[in-house]
Length: 298
Image 1: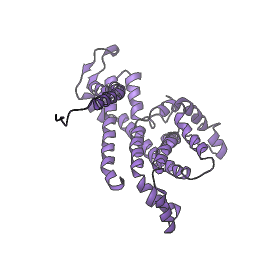
Image 2: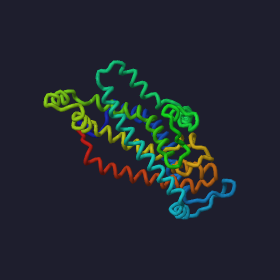
Image 3: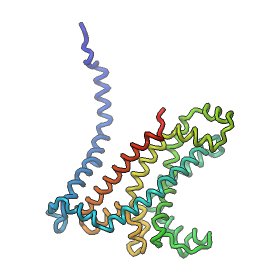
Image 4: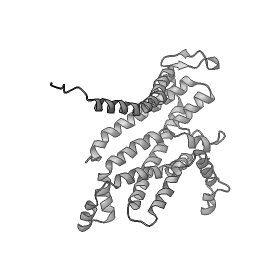
């Protein structure tokens, strides 16, 4: 008898069933906790919150018209962009240099890897408390060590950059681990050949390391930009309501929290988040188009 080519064997059916069984919880969680809230938020952005949070009123595109004319929203978008512009490239560059260093045969290499990764597992509240003390203008460690008087988190001109430094410190370990994984896939033969040709360490980094791990760098870049554009917790915990730098440090997610939960304007808050979603999508598309020029897939 001829067996149909498309007919699956019992083993293949069993493997397919078990495969779907294993990914089903993840797919279900992704749908309930991520995908459904996205559509719910977009739907909510067309409504105005009713009295006492009930009986939402359909307002169409009025929330979007209000957002585009809201100075506070544009200021928050600019604050978010400034944070991302500082945090993302600096954290990736430092993480790359550390990854290259810790990829070599170095005494205590495992210890240093652990130390650099520790900020990733530290509680955000603990991080905020420590850095708030370090930045204190009167008795903070930074001002006392360098004998200066700088209002790191209350000066509107530098507060957002001070917060970006905290972000850099927090994510270096995560970026380093990803880049380190990419480095370990690079054959040593390339470096040996480059050394024989007289290339120094800096030239090897630029012409061998970066091109060969460019897919990993691209992954880190795209995920870090998405995460940086959603900054909230460190701003919320470090900047007080009476801080003169509050307006210059509010991110779009912070603004969403303020409108939705403090002022009970959930429809308008949802509109702010939809604007952020569109901005992130535009940035992601630009990166996907641009990566064709500098990312080399082997």
